[in-house]
Amino acid sequence: MEFRKLLLESGNVCPFTEATTLPAACNKIYRRNFLKAGTILPAACNKIYRRNFLKAGTIGIIPKGGYRWRDNQSIIATQWLLWEEKQRGISIQHAARGQEAVINGVKVDGYCTETGQVFEFHGCFWHGCPRCIVVQRNEPCHNEPSTTMERRYEDTCAKTERLREAGYEVIERWECDFRNTMTDEISPATTSLVRQWRGATKIHALKQNAYVKPVTR
Image (cartoon, rainbow, N blue to C red; front, side, top):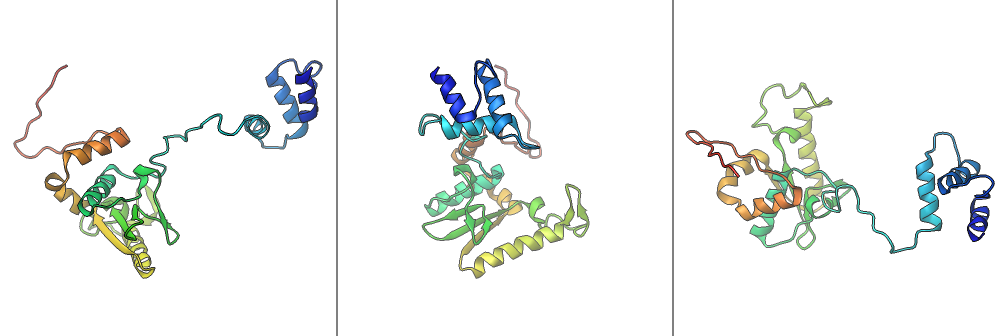
């Protein structure tokens, strides 16, 4: 009877005469009190449950993908940020630690609160590197026809300039430059850490006269 009283008070539905199961009762309450064109029943039931019945601190809902990597960031960009941390002895906020920082109204790849330094990693394709992409720079990009490689490069330069005008020191690195130094300067520990965070497998480019040794388990 207490259950009947609760549903009558909260939703004006009798569970014995109008709905014999809990889902049916929720459906009845929703249709009678909350239904609007284009709304979704599960969302309404969820809202009723969270607002009226869920006690604070009783359940943790982990976001899709976890609390890390809320923002998309390439593996090589994270490798560079970790390398910069090690070289400078600082801690950098980036996507692998939750989400990218927002500085001066825009997201940045990395930010150090201790030094006020902004770190930007420029993927050659996504930022229109003028050294790697020389031809057809003003042609529409196949994956994003609304822009061009030249426009991507100009937008990258403009973003950096705005950050510097706002008083931030911007440390930049182009993907092609970083790849040229990866073999000598990036430690296996750094690469391993990125793999653990992302669950990724590094792809190694074979040099001339190199061979792949098969391993059986």
